Amino acid sequence: ETGVTQSPTHLIKTRGQQVTLRCSSQSGHNTVSWYQQALGQGPQFIFQYYREEENGRGNFPPRFSGLQFPNYSSELNVNALELDDSALYLCASSLQGSQETQYFGPGTRLLVL
Amino acid sequence: GENVEQHPSTLSVQEGDSAVIKCTYSDSASNYFPWYKQELGKRPQLIIDIRSNVGEKKDQRIAVTLNKTAKHFSLHITETQPEDSAVYFCAASITGGGNKLTFGTGTQLKVEL
Image (cartoon, rainbow over all chains, first blue to last red; front, side, top):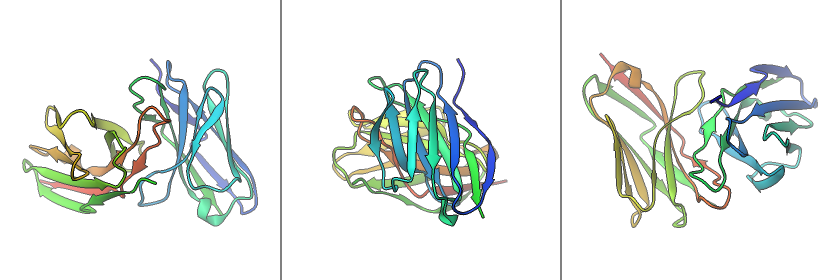
């Protein structure tokens, strides 16, 4: 059984640019959730994807968008980057309709200059 | 929406002592309460979880208790060891509807020799 993986591990962008982060879910899982973790804080829910559709969204603007692919992997896209977007971006996979326990990937550390 | 408060923000104990971290939640519909341990630079790792149909759950040195009436739940770690030093996050969610996790602000636990 393979765990949740994310790429890249680190990324540096400048304000106004766009970024795409990737997540591969744990084998057997069909749901991917994305979280933003600012330094010293708990993770904040961005959105969740199930069956290739958004299945719930937190308090994040539309410039945060995502995709889920038929193999359940997912992308997080952020447009018009702002300095405050600097954070650790975590994805978590789970099995909808079952225990729904979420297992996290190692995260992508994004720095916006 | 759901709001989770966590106390204390920092906790220092001597090796072998017990540690207790407390969380309260606001949404009475929440029915799933996981606890995650996050070491510096690492992913959040699930250490124990509890569902609303259970009042207490134990796994070796770790236990969680849930009081649905008061809307609070606690993590208990007995016989603490230096490797227990980390940031601990509680979370709450409603399963069956996407299981969006709302996290507390975290507790920095330091186990001193």
